[in-house]
Amino acid sequence: MKVKIYKSDLRESLHNFMRKCGYMPFHDSYIKNLSVSGYPRFHIYVVESETEFIFNLHIDQKRPSYGKATAHSGEYEGKVVEDEADRIVDFL
Image (cartoon, rainbow, N blue to C red; front, side, top):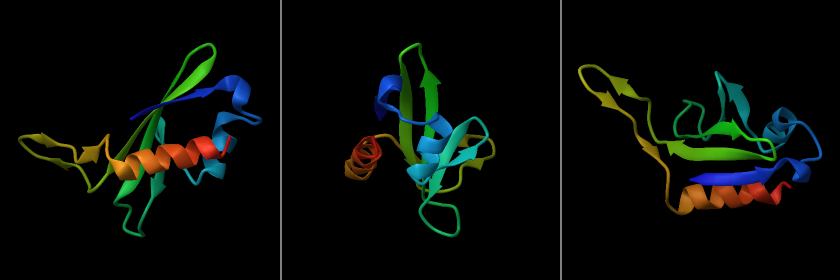
């Protein structure tokens, strides 16, 4: 799910905003663990334009499994993802 956040709506840095929302940096993205095992977790990739940040939000239900085939168990739609997107916007 894509969520647009206008830079003018942020009163702090993106990093601080994400921390306030409960996310921590993870490589070139942000994650929010939902259990002590690390999965499921919300995962956000951020694309920056001149005026806004576009969050590409999904939930990783389990650890990716790599072998002969690539499997990613991310869900980009659904009530859980929509509720999390709404929660992030509410922090503005």
